[in-house]
Length: 220
Image (cartoon, rainbow, N blue to C red; front, side, top):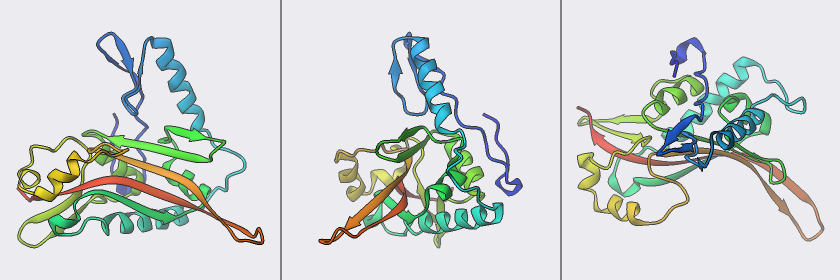
């Protein structure tokens, strides 16, 4: 994985799903396992098509996209409060057009449904923090610092051994609850919400959702 500084405005390339596991072939992004290399290759080729620019999407000015990235970081960091009672599974939702989502997350889209008009990106592992820092153009996009050497951060890998998590009974209950999303994984989703009234008047709006887990620790 080639990494670059967010300040240069260069985005790291997407993770290539080519990992193997116990004679099976596993996508190292969505962790779906295939019986053959050809199955993984087909999956990889489908994912690549999701990231090809479409003519029906607007091309946004770079400065507009950069400002929108700052808005995304602002709302993510609002979900990084101080205090154990607000730790665990979090969802951040921000109104956004399809073109805005695509301008930010192109090359990292891992799922797309044309029928449902839903996109998903998946980030996890030790390299995920830097990849997202490059995308969002802010190194500390996923951490918020507090007095007394405390920090609240987005969990992007298995941190079950961190002392603050072990001492927090509320977070232990959260871990035991079943969730559609894995702890240590950040899923970015774009989809539309629709609303209609009795007379058939229809409105719709797109939203970006960040599905994440946060945690807290002392600064070493």
